[in-house]
Length: 104
Image (cartoon, rainbow, N blue to C red; front, side, top):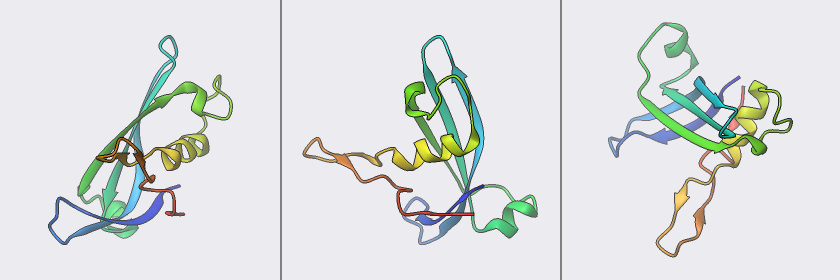
């Protein structure tokens, strides 16, 4: 599974279009999950072993998963999709970066 979403890399005009979950850290005692997506030009680049263009980290509470006692990949992608992109100047959460991303 991966997200298909064009994200510009560091204002370079180059986009990473294929985002794949690559790292997961699950702290059951603290109830926290940390996950990383790596962004590639496309799926072919990832399959060819090319280096990722960008890395994004996400951190969320274990309760964000459908079943907090089980770690399912689909649940992780769903939780990442729901994460806000950040906090705006007015203190409001910005829309989730991957909210409208296609799944493959």
